[in-house]
Image (tube, rainbow, N blue to C red; front, side, top):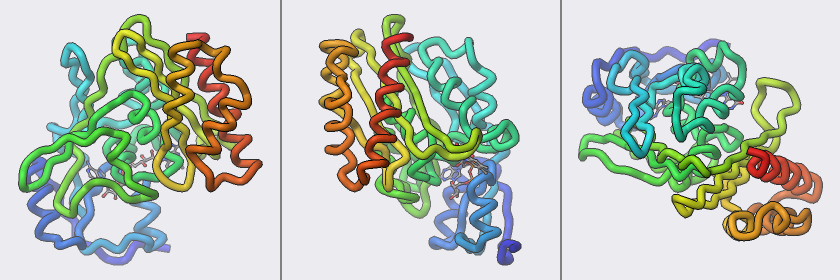
Length: 276
Ligand SMILES: Cc1cc2nc3c(=O)[nH]c(=O)nc-3n(C[C@H](O)[C@H](O)[C@H](O)COP(=O)(O)OP(=O)(O)OC[C@H]3O[C@@H](n4cnc5c(N)ncnc54)[C@H](O)[C@@H]3O)c2cc1C
């Protein structure tokens, strides 16, 4: 199927994109890498009147080292982060996660901001950025605001963004040298969205202990008690029963089989964390 007719404009900067969104009155959509929006247009699941192309806005394309955090422009592609492996001090998990998204062809065009804004429950960035305690910088006509990554996605395909707002950047605090992390996902076929996913970050120096489980029906869910136990008492505290209980409490909608799958993925993320 082909997309329904739409108008197209290329925004020169973020302000122009926000103004066009506002004028669109809910009928305009931003276009970044097109890796999610393209299929949605073709399937006519999205029928915007106007597409606002933000893929050439330089202000969205930076990966900046700000001493204690990485500031990543919303338009940075997954492959740029993947290729930054070894160069992102305190942000190695970003390159690891980026390199596991889809296929290289998708990673070459898909962007971190587009992935967050699309808010697919099985997507990698909402999960990884929640575990990393990142913040999303949102710009609208009224100015700029920051939202914690774990509050940005409200439910499946629904975010904090108002109709005239754009994701401008993501701020990812750097992990300290003693930090440990593990990321694991189960995909039936390499390159496809996962059936279950989990991210764990333990950084005693920054008092950060987070485990999130993803690929649920909505946003990634925290396993706060399990994360505390892992930080305080190590892997021995994360028994099979403790993991199952934590997953069941965080995602009561899962049936017994899905709960096992998600618990298994959390166990692997924890193992990787303590091996790192
Ligand atoms: C075959 C295939 C496999 C995939 N597998 C995975 C996977 O395993 N894991 C995973 O995480 N993802 C996967 N994806 C999705 C991929 O990561 C996309 O790149 C991503 O979801 C969307 O990014 P994009 O830049 O292409 O956004 P687009 O498709 O251009 O836009 C997506 C949505 O975000 C909005 N948007 C874009 N940029 C902004 C912005 N700056 N501010 C506000 N709104 C914005 C658009 O209006 C649109 O609603 C897969 C995609 C494909 C095609």
